[in-house]
Structures are given as C-alpha cells and as structure tokens.
Image (cartoon, rainbow, N blue to C red; front, side):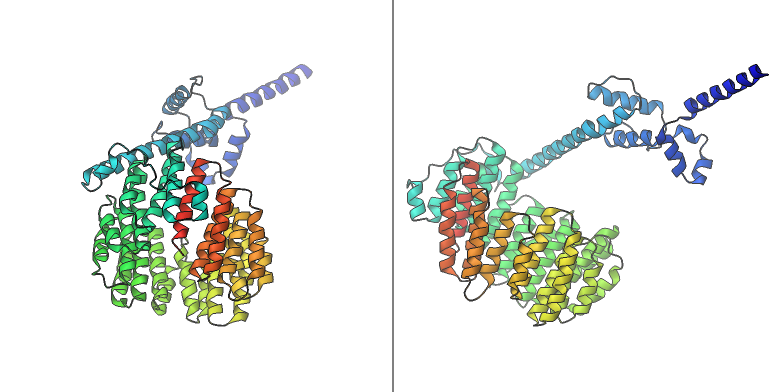
Length: 559
C-alpha cells in the first residue's frame, strides 16, 4: 500500500514536470496568458504556443526587413530562417533559436546598427537627389565643379591689427584663414556656412558663391543658397536675393528663401514677383504643415503692410488644405496654424471659430500658443487662457501662458499678468527635458523683468541650468530695460564670466551686442563687441575660431 502510494506520488510529480516542460514555465508565458482577454484565449488553438518574447523579436526582424507578415508571437519556420539571417549578419551562432540573449543583442546591437544604416542610406539618397538637382539647373551646375582653392585674404593685416580696428572684411578673412586649417570636411562645411551667411549680410555676392563651392556636402550647398538669400534680404539687396532664390533647385529651400524675399518686398514698392513665385511653389511641397507655416508667416507680414485682402486669401487656402487632408493630425495642425495667423492679423472671431471646431487637439503646435497671445491682446484673457489649458505639451503650455502674460502687460493689466506668470511658473515644473525647461524659465524671467519685478526675474534665472542661457537671459533683460541698467549689466557680465568655454562666452557677448544695437544702445553694443573680440583670442580650435569670427563679422554690420 505504501509502495502504491509512493508510485502514485512519483507519477504525479513526473506529470507536473512534463506539463511544465510542455506548457512552458517561464514567467513571460505565464504573464502573457494572464493578460490575454478571455475571448482571445478561447480563439487560440493552443495559447501556450504564443510568447511575448517571440512577438518582440518578430517586431524587430520585420523592422529589419528580414521577416514578412505580422508579429503573431508564434514560432515558425520563417521566423527561424529570419533569426539565422540576423545571426549570420552579426557573426553569431546560426541556431535560429528564440532566446533572451538574442533579444538583448537585437536591442543593444542590431537596432542601433539598423538605424545607422537607414540614416546612411537616407543621406546617400538625399545627396544623390541634391546633386542631380544642382546639375540639372544651369545656374547651379558650377557649384559642383572641383572646389576652388582657399582664397588668399586680400587684407594681410595681422589678427592684432584687425582686433584693434575691426572691419567686416578682415574678420571674414580671419574666419577664412581658420577654415583652411580644419581637417574634417563636415566641420569645415559647417564653418563655411557661417562665413557664407556673414558674406551675404555684407553683400559680398561673388565671394559667397566661391565659398559655397568649397562645401563638400551637396545637401549643404542647397541649404547655404537658402541661407545666403536670407542674408542678402537682411542686407537690403532684394534684387540679388531674388535672383539667387530663383536658382535654388529644391522646392522647400526655395520656398523659404522666397518667403524671406516676399516679406521684405511687402515693405517696399517692389512688384511682388517673389510672392507670385512662392504661391506657385507651396502647393508642390509634400510637407503640408511646413508649407502652411511659410504661407501663414507671409500672410501675417502682408497684413501688417496693409495687404489684408491677399493675406486673408492665403489663410483661406490653408483652411481649404486642412479640409482636404485625410490625416486628422495634419488637419488639426493646419487649422491651428490658420487660427494663429487669423488672430495675428486681427481676425480674432475667425480664429476663435476655428479653434472651437478643433475639439480634442491631437498634436500640439506652437501656432496655438501664438493664437493665445493674439487673443489675449484683444482683451479676451479668459478665451486665451482656455486655449492655453487645451495645450497638453508642457513646453508649449508654458509658452502660451508666458505669451498671454506679455499681452496682458501690454494692455496694462498687471494683476492678471502676475497671476498668469504664476501659472506659467507652476506649469514649468512639468517640463521634463532640461533644455526645454531652461528655455521656458528664461521666457518667464524676461516677462517678470518687463513687469519690472527684477527680484522675481533673478529668482527664475537662478533656476536655469545652462550658464550660457543664464547670461543670455540677463543680457536680453538689460537690452530691453530703459533707464539706468548699470546693475543689470554688472549681473550679466558676472554671469558671462562663469561660462567655461571661450567660444560660448564670446557668442553670448556677440548676441548681447546685437541686441543692444537693435535697441539703439550703440555705446553698450560697441563695448560688448570689443569684449567679444577679446574673448575670441583665447579660442584655439580652428573650427571654433572660424565660426566666432564669422559671427563677429555679422555683428559688426549692426552698428
């Protein structure tokens, strides 16, 4: 009897062991079964053939184009073959088995490699497309000729002499000298782009074209053409800007260049050729959001120049594009862009009507924050705050509140401004990314300073993690403050001096110099420019030197 009992116990144990082996005893399978809906369990012939580990590996192999079909979580011959292909590609043992080790390898090595390969392939295709576009256009074909040798600067003055009597030409020459010493082509291309921008702002059309020829990345050749147009617009050389924009063989970059020319033309008596060209290009852009952003920017500028009828026509077209879009996120975003622009040109009721139709906004857009500001500027604070509350992205929510506060301050409602800034400060705690949080806090600090609450502004600035942004914010406040700003300037210099990088210190001072010049504070601007020149001498890297002297050349044009 005892023997029979022992045999039964032994048999039960064996059955349990076999069941565990057959059914799978891993926590993954048990967890998967526990989380499946009852109906799905009933629909499967054998639920224990399914595994989340198998499914996750399938998802990746499908992403790598090694497996076709769907990720059903079941092992098959095709899956084993796909695993062997993956293992062969990465020098692993080709057993075709599903395992935790395989999954960890895919996540740690396979997926990063696949992403790198996709990016390389995308760059290859973009470069080929850019090259073909440049070659197809007679006006840009020469930009792909053999790179011209680095020009010998005409001004042979030493760096010391240039710093003593800085002129745009000698600063650009110094930047050029530095680029000839940069070994890595991608760094050299970046520096050359900055020089091209400075040359454009100085109206040096022939020289900038020679520098564009020195850029090795054909994609950046097209980008530099667009940036040169914008620089020529800043220099007031609209004829040269228009001619160069017409030569850009890429719709998106050409559209942005033409937008800059159009906005400048709207303030002059020019015949509006840029607007006609732009309106022909925008419908061809695949990215409808980008096209609508450009159109809204131009419409706002036209309205400011008393061309309201044309502006409304452009914005109405954005609304029609939204209605035709099959994608709800795109449709909502286009309507948000239109609403923001309508608000900016004073069509507040139209903007509010559009915003009421949006319902639950699928994808937040900066246009919503801008619309909130314009609605508040019309004295409709409650409506503006209600719109801000609908913006779910913390960064944009804080931006909207800060803009509303600025609008309230412009209307003289300081009590409402303080309350809104308090809301913005509390909401800024929800921003997770440090860079975005710093930017939001800097905006709040500037708004506090405009409220003449400098103690609150100081408290907010201290929360900014980036020393460069701390200093930049203090200079921004000093530039915009009327009257005696000695104390503000002292704090800004102190904040600048703690920045470790000489390049960053010089960049902050250059930006501050430009801000002062735009506010008509010429003496302060000159003093900051001189301080930036001193900092530039401490920069050893040729790449950083080329970039900082390009920026100095651009800043020199401000005064």
